[in-house]
Image (cartoon, rainbow over all chains, first blue to last red; front, side, top):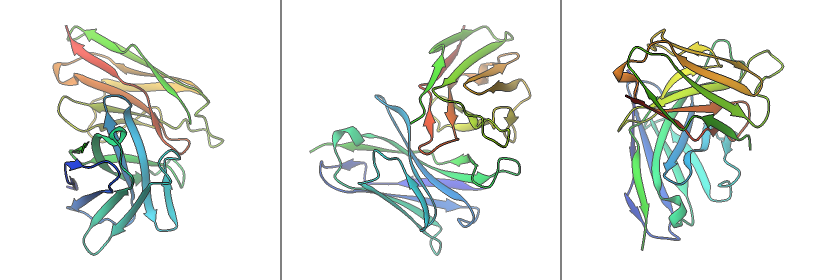
Amino acid sequence: QVQLQESGPGLVKPSETLSLTCSVSGGSISGYYWNWIRQSAGKGLEWIGRFYTTANTRYHPSLESRVSMSVDTSQNQFSLSLRSITAADTAVYYCARGRLTENGGPYYYVMDVWGPGTAISVSS
Amino acid sequence: DIVMTQSPPSLPVTPGEPASISCRSSQSLLYSNGHNYLDWYLQKPGQSPQLLIYLTSNRASGVPDRFSGSGSGTDFTLRISKVEAEDVGVYYCMQALQTPRTFGQGTKLEIK
């Protein structure tokens, strides 16, 4: 059974870079869309972006200038980097696996496995 | 971005009774292949969201058949035929037609 586990610093200072890692166990990281989603009291659930390959990565337009994602297949890990952090980035961050379905077309995936989330607070 | 609007925000239900949650999108989620790209997730207390329904009406693996989804275009509904205590949590609809994927604000189901 595939399990995901996010890890991160917990507390980040404003203007710094947030780096999060999602460790995948019990399955391969290849062949899936890897997503980051965050949840804050003020904005609810917000999709941040997803990585399939280096050439096939999409980000939320509002975050595109500050975000990058990557996959390390040797470590079975998926990473998020968010630059120039502000208090508005305070949230619980989730990673989620995106799996293609048989009937949804070539680009549709379901987020069928989620990590438990890691809480990130931005404060000086 | 496509805006998703759910109602009601809160839904108290007696066990054994049915429940219904509405979700509306700011633009049609119907694609030329005939699919409506609308998914439903449930976030149980203290947990991360879990997939319930995908492509409007397909139950995810392990989801009881008391859950059903319907709708087309901009109007969608999640129904629970007979609510059980384990169904409490916040239900979210999410559109998967366009990037960025966007979620509704959630409907909190609670037991009376």
